[in-house]
Image (cartoon, rainbow, N blue to C red; front, side, top):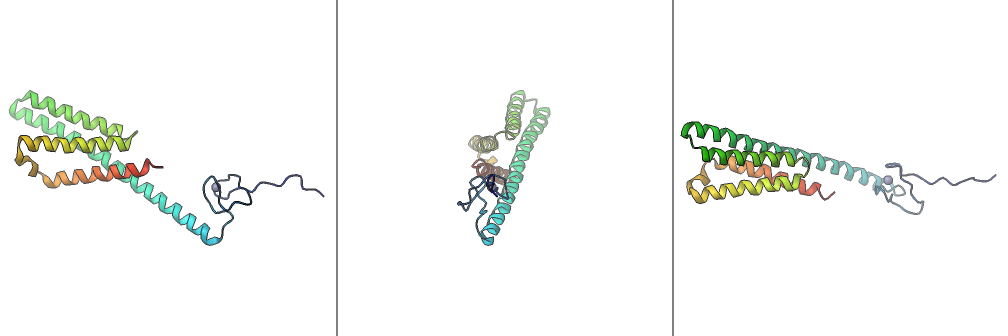
Amino acid sequence: MEEIAIQQPLCSQCSAEITSTSKFCTHCGFPENGDEKEKAVFHAKKAMKKNEIMDDHKRISSARNTLYWIAGINLVLGFIHFFASQDIASLIVQIIVGAIYLVLAYWSQKKPFAAILSGLLFYLTMIAILAIAEPATIFSGILFKIIIIAFLAKGVYSASQNSKE
Ligand SMILES: [Zn+2]
């Protein structure tokens, strides 16, 4: 009796072919020929990574919602201010600023890192410009500003972690 062909062993995790001499699957890294402990470690790491990716996605979507929020607030405040003061120039500025945040929020679906980082830098620039024009403004709604910065910064960090994949 002859063996017709020696069947190539397949990785139990990703079904890629693995050579009997190598301990790890070259495709997914599973220690197919390793011991139980090594296999357990592989599964634990995979689960942790999945959790991290889910957390990253949550932080990115919180940052995106924050950008939509700032856009909305700028537009609403712009119109409220306009009806009170009839100042068309500042309304136009508020609309442009609001539109920039809208575009960044939308763009963050495709390029989360670049979009959220731009949003954060733009937000900080706006605070700086206002603070130079009117130093007292830096303290108005400071808690609110810190929360926005924190949400955006977390989003930037999570997006940078994710883009390494
Ligand atoms: Zn594999």
